[in-house]
Length: 337
Image (cartoon, rainbow, N blue to C red; front, side, top):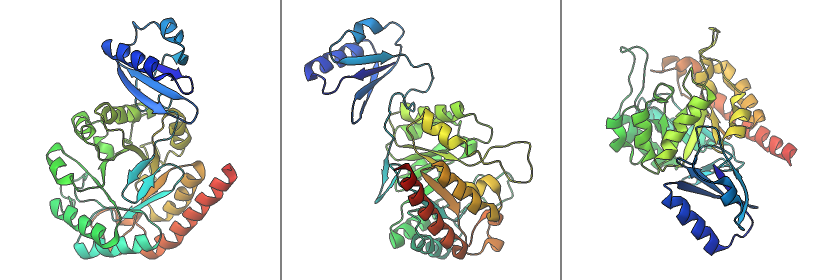
């Protein structure tokens, strides 16, 4: 249920309403916009009298919400969520470009790539320290050592780092990570989602390869229900009958998510296709469709990469693409104005 308040509601009446709702066991999430304040009521609202609440002087309207995701629902939070990460932000009309290697291979490698992508306009460094691989014989990442190399790259460049958490046991190692990524395979690892929901570090949830929009949003709801509202969604392609590309990138997810939720959405064209020559057209399409950012894999030597070389761009390929993306983003903002 959502309660839409009139402008400048009487403080005493508002406090009385909040206290009454809390006595009923209702959790209240307040969203203050330019024109209205919205109270999102979470809990058993079936016994609340809508007419009684509507009759209050400070209340403009009351609506029941049918969707099972409450905190992530745009009806509860009409304004777009903007997530501050270091000196950059995700959402709020900016285009966040996260770039870096699929897997951290050495200190020299990740520092060099970090410097290159920053010079090209990237505002965040992505890199895998722990790697979920289909084959147990594939490179599994450098683990804790990889995290240390990412921190060194951050110190050298100032770029916030985003990297994947795979298991609850790894969580203590992620205290100094700027954004925790939950991968597609773990999108419905509910214990892991609950754990990251009990801290305030931003969490980026990649869509499961067979997940529906609602299932994806319910994963976000798990994190937000724990008290962490700093959630980012990442579309990385879904599994379809088509085998030419690694996955099928669902660009329709951008306008759909913009309608259903206030959370920012990032597009990963690298994992979506598995082919580096498809990264540019799909990244451009994602920006034109209104995404809040992109996650692009960049490697200094893709032919010898230990993980996902075929989908990685070289720094000299990423540089012109990044400039095109930023220019297109500014053009799209101008058209909206």
